[in-house]
Image (tube, rainbow, N blue to C red; front, side, top):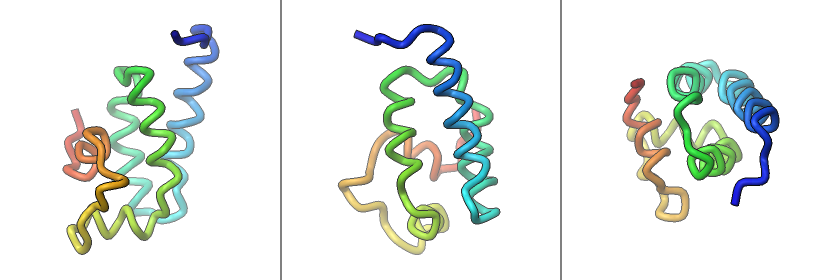
Length: 90
């Protein structure tokens, strides 16, 4: 059961959007921020939770995955991360 009010959900989405667009590495601002900007309104509660987990991944690791320099470790893999790294901006 989701105990968030509509206002809480809106605040959660705004925080995630800000975090996605202010990563510290410009390339990740573009990759992650662009994807989140395009899709944040349609994310389910489960996807928001996954996105919060993804936000904790260091930029250098995620950039290496996005540029295919490294494989995504199984412990980090998720459908949402795969969409982000595929640069599928809906």
